[in-house]
Structure formats: structure tokens, C-alpha cells
Length: 111
Length: 112
Image 1 (cartoon, each protein chain N blue to C red):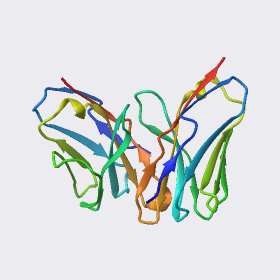
Image 2: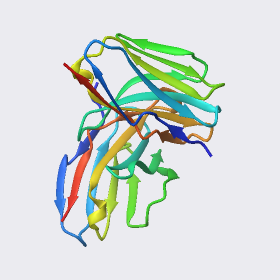
Image 3: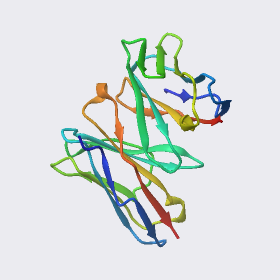
Image 4: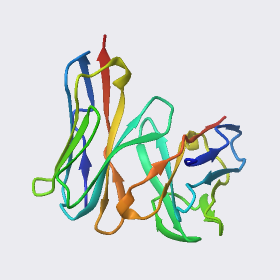
């Protein structure tokens, strides 16, 4: 059974520092992995989608890597800003087509 | 292009009542999934519809049901509401698995 874990559950960094968010999964047979951002009380905003055949995806200050052999994905946010404060969730589509979420990492960027 | 639209944004209902939530997917997307989000349980999968057929189902009681219409719009119904049904209900649509999911802004349901 696939399990998706995000550690730590919460993270606080000063503005300007790089953010490193981790997502681990137990079964490497996945279709893809997607990173989302959620602001309090709001829906999920898709940040990056990595296909199983890809090693990384980049968009602006965001970079996500995928290592299926070790069951890990990492989201890097360069030069963090207070506006990056949010909860970040990873989710993957497993080999059965089931979409599973991690519990999320709550990020606070302090000015 | 228009995103995933969920209506209404907010709802207040009384215990025992029933409620219907609506989700309009991105044009061309035939897959619609529903999730319940609460502070204690996080995001929990309710069900997924594809071309008017329920393709996957989560572990929720029969009070939770859904359907999808020929235009891919989906509705979720909760009967005999309980206080514990208070949550943010999120809908997501997808063109196909390889393209990932796009979420709506959610419907905040409060049961009093």
C-alpha cells in the first residue's frame, strides 16, 4: 500500500532563505507527482507536475526533483518571500490511477 | 481558460438536512474528483467520476453520494448532515492522469 509522507509538518524560515520541502513515498511505481500550494481556507494551486520519466521540473524560483529509486521528491523555493507562506502538499498518482496526498508542510516566511 | 468552478462558496446547514454541491470542470476534462478537508483528517478522497461513471470511491458512508452529467459537471450530495461533516469540500478535474489535477476554490460547509 502506497504511503506519502511529508516531513517536517511545519517550517519557519527568515525571508531570503532557500526553502527545501520533502516528500517521500513507499512504492516507486508512480505515474507522476504533483506539488500544490494551499493558502488558509482556499483551494489548491498546482505548482509543478513531474512525470515518472522526469528527474526535475522548474518554474521561476521553484524547482522540484523526483528520485523514484529512493522514493523521494524535493521542492526547492529559492530566496523565500513572506508571500510564500502557505501549506505545501505533494500528491502522486500511483500505478492504479489513485491520487494520494501527503499531509503537507506548513511554511512561514518571516520578514 | 476558465478553471474549476465550485458553487456555492459557503453554506450553512442544520443537522439532519441534506446538501448538494456543484463542480464544473475545465472544458474538455472528463474526470472529476471530490475531496473532504478537515483540520484533523487532512485531505480525504471521496470519489472520482469519469464520463458519468464512478471510477473510484473512498471510505465514506453512503450518506455521501455523487454523480456526473453528460457535460462533465458533477454534483456531490450529503444527506442527513452531521456536525462532523463540516469541512472544506474540494473538487478537482483532470484531462487524463498524465496531466495531473486542477482544483477548484472549494465549498466551505458548516453544519450547526
